[in-house]
Length: 267
Ligand SMILES: Nc1ncnc2c1ncn2[C@@H]1O[C@H](COP(=O)(O)OP(=O)(O)OP(=O)(O)O)[C@@H](O)[C@H]1O
Image (cartoon, rainbow, N blue to C red):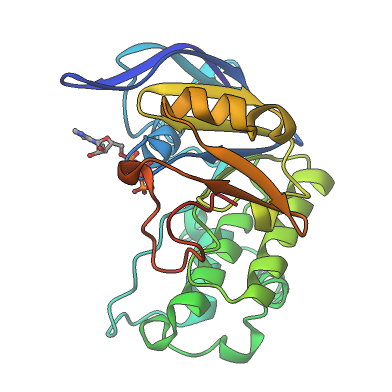
């Protein structure tokens, strides 16, 4: 996956400019930044859903295109309508054979794969429950299973840990990491919280107010770099193996309800 001179502006507002980046197979790549900095839009560019204002985005040497089977996508969480008629296993099944409606060779094989995926995300117990009746976290785990179903070369995840409890945050991040390292997928993981995935992340793209920085967490998550990005003095503190960012500008605070230290914890 490669970006060259990638620039994205909406009217007067530039989300990023002149971004050159290669994300490699087997790389766990995190995208961080405050609300509105362009993290979701970055994924949409890779999905071929948003066009760059300038520059190129390619996957395997070809321009990105919508609907590519090589890409798995865990969208930012939106709940299913309570009346959605799909059961949990049907939803995961769409990822396994959704591109081959009508052919349905190997029904038993498909069914085994669905069971395996449900097991990976701890959803076996609610395999037959309609998705609209499940909790936000339960639905989220199904989306992860669905995205992994086709064994994608690139896995794009938009805040996949939102509304998961600690145990499932760990299980889901470990699962995504396995896809990355055992199946050699490139993972692009959008998050407000680097701490739950700190052990897995190879590199970070940090977006803030039209500026960006790419590097390893050790290179980017520092007092100097983040102060430069935010144009304001912030401190990165390490405590109990966690990274805490103190003194973020008011406009940049993260207001997701499940963020712990609301005013300032990136990690
Ligand atoms: N099609 C569009 N037209 C105009 N502005 C847009 C469009 N899409 C996104 N934006 C703007 O671009 C900015 C970045 O949005 P994006 O959703 O990528 O941010 P984000 O970093 O994912 O934020 P959050 O952390 O809140 O999810 C926002 O200010 C948004 O309003």
